[in-house]
Length: 308
Ligand SMILES: Nc1nc2c(ncn2[C@@H]2O[C@H](COP(=O)(O)OP(=O)(O)OP(=O)(O)O)[C@@H](O)[C@H]2O)c(=O)[nH]1
Ligand SMILES: [Zn+2]
Image (cartoon, rainbow, N blue to C red):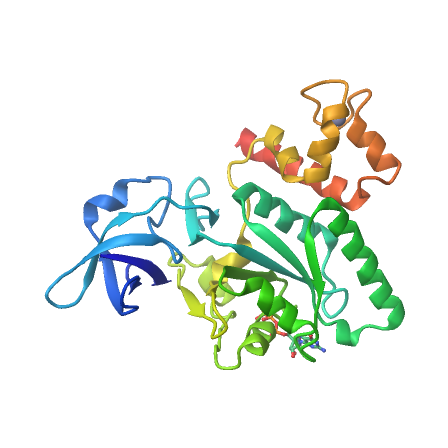
C-alpha cells in the first residue's frame, strides 16, 4: 500500500492511504531507522511511503520513496546531526513585513538562499500592507521590483483585509506549501484567512522546550478546501543550510552566480579578488548591497563551520 506521511511526532506517524484517503497510525520497522545515520529522524511529513497493515490497523512503514526536496535543521543536541522537518515541498512562502515587526532584508535573503539550496520555489509575500502609508507602499513596490528582477515571485498582501488573498490561493492551489516569517509577521493569521477552520497552531513549542533535551518534533500537514496543503511545523522557523561549502554559496544567489561568469578568476569568491565582476556590479548598483552583505555573512559562517 502507498501513502503520504501527514503527521510526525518523532516516534509515531500518521499515514494517509493514497487510494482510500484513510489515515492510519504508523510506525517504522526498526532496521530501517539506521539507513541514514546522520539524521535524527528517518521520516518526515511530506514523505511518500509504502506500508503494510497489521491486524490492529497499525501501519508499518516499509519503504520511503526518494524525496524531491526537503528542509532540514540542525539537531538541537548534536551539531553534526540534522533533522528533516518536511519533505517534497512545492512552495515556500516568506512573510515579509515592512513594519510591525520590521523584517530585515538579511532574513529574506537567507531564506531565499536556503530555498535555492534545497531546490524549493519561494514566493515573497509582503504582508500587512493595510498598515502602510502610500510612501511606505512605494517602498514595498520598489523592493518587489528588486526581487522580481532577480527572478523571484512576489505579492503584496494583507491577511487582515484579505487583499490579494485570492491571487495567493491560485498560486498555492494543489501544491504543498510551508510558511516562514518572523514572530508576529502574520503566519497564523494568513493561514486562517486563507481557510477559516484550518486552525494551525504555529506557536506550539515554548522556548524552554526548544532548549531542552527532548525537543518535540511535532509536524503536521493540513489540507486546504481549495486544493493542496500546508505543512505546519515549529522547526520550520530554524530552517538553515547545513554543511554547505563556502564555494557553493554563490550558487544560491542567482544574480551573483550569473555575474561570476565575467570574473577574471574562474574560482573567484567575490571577496577581494582583482577584476571581480560581482564586486563591480555591487558597486554600480546592479547587485543589491544588502544581498551581497548576506552572501559575505553566509561565507563567513560556512568558514567557521568548516573549522569546527
Ligand atoms: N493590520 C494587520 N495585522 C495583521 C495582518 N496579519 C497579521 N496581523 C496581526 O499581526 C499579529 C501577529 O499575527 P500572527 O498571525 O499571530 O503572527 P505569526 O507570524 O503567526 O506569529 P508567531 O505565531 O509568533 O510566529 C496579530 O495581532 C495579527 O492580527 C495584516 O495583514 N494586517
Ligand atoms: Zn568575482
